[in-house]
Length: 198
Image 1 (cartoon, one colour):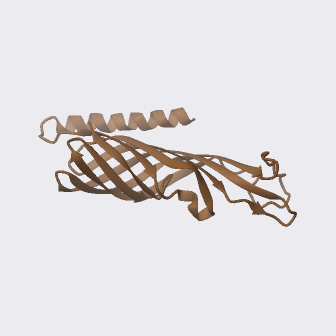
Image 2 (image 1 turned 180 degrees about the vertical axis):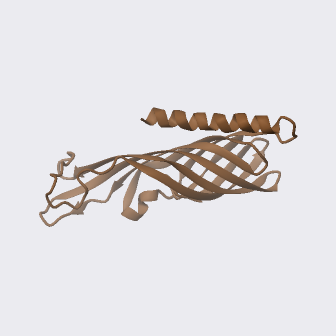
């Protein structure tokens, strides 16, 4: 399923790329392939009192088919562990949540100077979840019985539709190589990293 969605995302980018080349064949608006790799400064699940097992990471690859418009594919990963919780029966457990996000993003850019631009947009995708409840005393995964009282859903969904909006900025310190900062929903609420125009 994951491979099929990734293939769909790449095919969609190819479709937009083909259309943009056709529309621009008689114009002087060159397209730009882009690639960005970032790290998260504020994991999305921090509100659940979760600690990051590793910093959230994300990569994007896309095509800017006009001066102000672009589309790209997004792939992000995060892994967090909640703080231990003690229940009335004396049992203590914590949850490990691994999240893989795949999506397509549409962006609108506003260039301020040849080196600096703002952007914003929206993303539609899928969030694949791997959620485990761990007994902190034994380290074993816990199995919740259907119908019995439990603080957690014994059968959590392993996929969720992903809708997100974001704003950010790029600064190119040399031709084709720069840095970006972004705020929005994803594997992290705040991201920064390197960006390239190819």
